[in-house]
Image: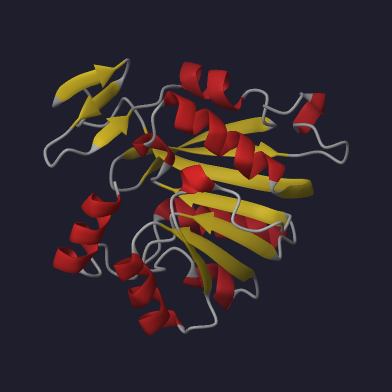
Length: 212
């Protein structure tokens, strides 16, 4: 995965431009309304989905597997943007508890065990009453079923990238014990779900659900 993203950022540079995704705009509005001040963005890339939070007074820390992407983020948004270099499967990179965690178009690139660990690691880095939002591709996307099937609802696409496609049932299975409180349909690059979770003051998921 490191080689794939290094090559992508080297060859395509700012491949998605600088406008934040629709899911990012929705998350930013929610975070502002709920006074989220300190956020973690796993898979921050070159920062296009991070700057809007900073513009609205939030402190942002990122995690990014590509050194090239980190260099681009610092070039465009300043060296004061803290980004841990490494894979999200190696979390945690610090011992900070965050008010909010936002992950865009990343979790569907992981396999089942990696997704479970990633959700658990994010949940563990939430402060009491903190929120974690995940934007991920759905089975409604035209990419679903293309390429080589490597696991249930997971396909290897052109270029060697493996992608898992969510439906509402698998979201309940994977996030149901992590304070899941809403699943929103959003059109981004493809049909996406914006998955919303909250950790309550007892250290459990919203509505008293136990942690994953």
